[in-house]
Amino acid sequence: MKVAWIKIALVLAGLSVCSSATPAQTTVAASLYGAFQGSTSGNNTQQSPANAAGGLFELRHITNPLVGFEVTYAYNRANQGLSNLSPYTPGCPVFDCSSSTSTAAISANAHEITGDWLASLKVATLRPFVLAGGGLLLTVPSAGTITTITSPVCTTACPALSTATTTTASTRTSMQGVFVYGAGLDWTVLPHLGLRLQYRGNLYKAPDVATAFHSTNAFTHSAEPMIGIFFQF
Image 1 (cartoon, rainbow, N blue to C red):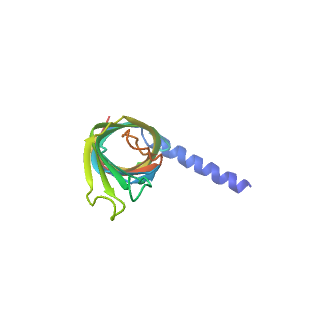
Image 2 (image 1 turned 90 degrees about the horizontal axis):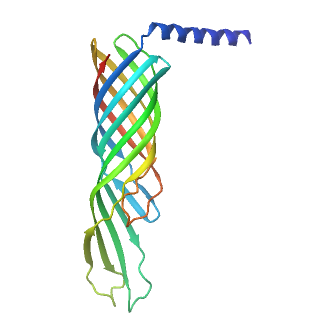
Image 3 (image 1 turned 180 degrees about the vertical axis):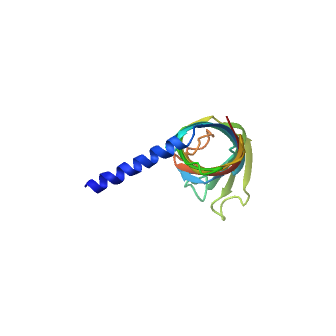
């Protein structure tokens, strides 16, 4: 038992030494990233977001290796592809013998604001770090269209032609909570300037942006590898 307490004391002492030996750091940073997002399905809706490029701005303060905080703002395009399949009306072979498939293409922008906790350790000109936090993700549609294709179900009694109609989509802004995690490395190149390499992952519910489609009500994930520069005060 005494040995265990001695080990704990040594660990705490080591952290205290690292904390006192590592000066506090405040940085502002700007990064470019790629947002790679997964598809979701549910409630008769398939949702497929497009991959996109974006930008991230960070204000970060690190007090010691275990205590660091940052606030971030990120922007990227968030175009959404939606599709569903409505069952045909069972009136064949005389009436209503067709099925309708609707697809939507929604142009949108994503705005994300988060607050994150960081742990880091400075080694010479390098500072590896890990982070976790949360915030809000706002998906704002800018335009969209819906294409509906009506096709025959019964080839003997139904018309042989499919018809397609395209209309303007009715859209809405969607806001979700988002959980953020990540890891990275700061490399100080000049006394107050350096490179920041990091990976951030976001977990959130798929945005509900088109009124003609049910929300998938499913969680999705976006992976964001990024590179940027930081300025240290």
